[in-house]
Amino acid sequence: MLQSLQRQNHPLASVKGQIELLDDHSSIGIPSFKRKLNEFKLDPLKPTGIDIFQINVGKMCNQVCAHCHVDAGPDRREIMTKETMRQCLDALEGTAISTIDLTGGAPEMNPHFRWFVEKLSELGKQIIVRCNLTIILANPKYNDLPEFFKKHKINVVSSLPYFNAKRTDTQRGEGVFEKSIKAIQMLNAAGYGRGNPALKLDLVYNPAGAFLPGDQASLESLFKRKLAEYDLVFDKLFSITNLPISRFLAYLVKTERYEAYMTELVNAFNPMAAANVMCRNTISIGWDGYMYDCDFNQMLELKLRSPDHIKDFNLETLASREIITNQHCFGCTAGAGSSCGGATT
Image 1: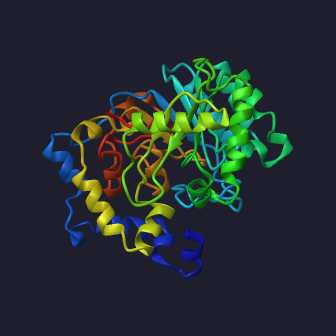
Image 2: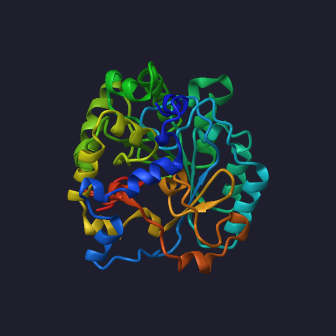
């Protein structure tokens, strides 16, 4: 959808256009996110520490998902270089940062992905890879990914919008559900999803429309029961709210649901979720090495004020920064909260 808007020279095809729309909150009668934080004495929002490095190693992907906030796809050429990866490794060395969350696009499509994972393993960090599942079957060179993940005890986190083909394929493309099932079978055969803490397979659910996700625990039980019909197992399910940016924002505007969705997010504001937002313990690094408070700010190009690049990483300065917020942040604070690790309350 975003590519279609670009051909039409639509303002939402640019980051500037998205931010201008989000900033125009008074016209639809909702408060600013900053004002909402103020009501609960949470402004300015500050870090509680830095425990997680979430690194986007590139926007290239073998899929073009309707909800993708990264606007990833096969035509994207933004790829993290080995030099930037080395800068990340230099920043991490000697810190207590425990978890590295590798994302994309399809992170496995970065030509230096395996080298980077091996170097991160040598640092003794817990590694998460956001695997879209179908990449395992996309090309024979990826068929051994389950064994590679196993070797490095990687926590595999994979999006699976639903437990049937109709809803999954509508959101992620024709044939994705069938390929995802085969990929989970391969991961299960490698020992993933069977309760071994070293071989965790977690799934991600996000709504297929302009509504909030249901209760995470109930959804997990339902997914486990339904996927058991395919003899599949997994560890946890994370429910994530669709944030009003990129392709999903374009969808909201095109279907005239933007105002109603934003109103729903504001009305569901939960101060406990706001106190637990993931940006309080996470730093997000873009494919070019620039740093952000979260993956969503990264896609809106809301860089950290200073330092803003991984080559200038300073843990003490970053741990005392003021987190940059905007209207899209209502997505992370609605209901039970939303993060890359699912509900936050």
